[in-house]
Image 1 (cartoon, rainbow, N blue to C red):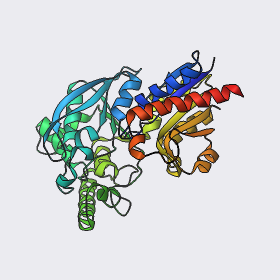
Image 2 (image 1 turned 180 degrees about the horizontal axis):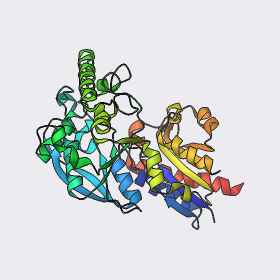
Image 3 (image 1 turned 135 degrees about the horizontal axis):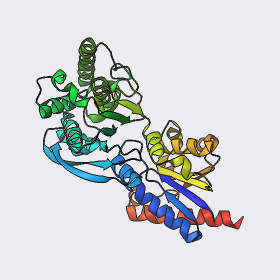
Length: 363
């Protein structure tokens, strides 16, 4: 009896990680009904993190009234899990409260967009007794260096400034699930690299970077240390910096964090292969994206890795990097709208893995 481990990223805009893995499982079972299959929904801290972490770790989802990047009332969600050490943990995907998708392109204003809603989620999690936070920093609409988040904390705890409320966070441990390594300021910082994607023009980028430099300088003078050059400080418009500088957060690769929490290496024992994937696979997959992280773990345990994707380029490089098989689920010249249809994607994942396994069994 063969053992398969499924760890497939979401097909963005089409399927969640769990949906893709359910389709893969059906495809494998149609070729081998006796197969042992372990499914681990995955995310690197970006889109879909909340669903993936809660599905993989058995968490519950809590809905909270908070504010979006334009300070409009919304309802956002975060997860609550209890890992093996019994420490109640909140899983916060910042895009739930301040995601770029929450603001219509015509309404975006990068100079006013605020991370206030993230602070509201943190406060609610603390009220629920969570002493550990896992914060995914992908997909934000903000570039306020986390100032809005800090203001929400100050407002909630009733202080005049952060020093007044600092003691409330003494026992709070925060891990940033983040693969972004950019610093807060400069040519590789939050403003220059990410703000244009959020609607900023060249003049606004320069203004945002000056704001970030000034905020970092004042904060360093106040605390006596400076986290603005730490890898990940520029993530989520500088929210990573504020969480590091003011709340002592530590950054960890999102996929490595999830794989550790789910005891992924233990799941690999006795496995025939790992199936991973994403919507589009190309040479950028090898630059620290989720399937590459899965590949590295599997190779250390001597387990072969199969990569599936809706679109594939640079197949030779993917194979040379160590993927044993690279499979495109769509025929050549497939219409993109058809490929993005969830029902079509599910059917093609099933059929691709069924055919692949039948071919392997016939050898």
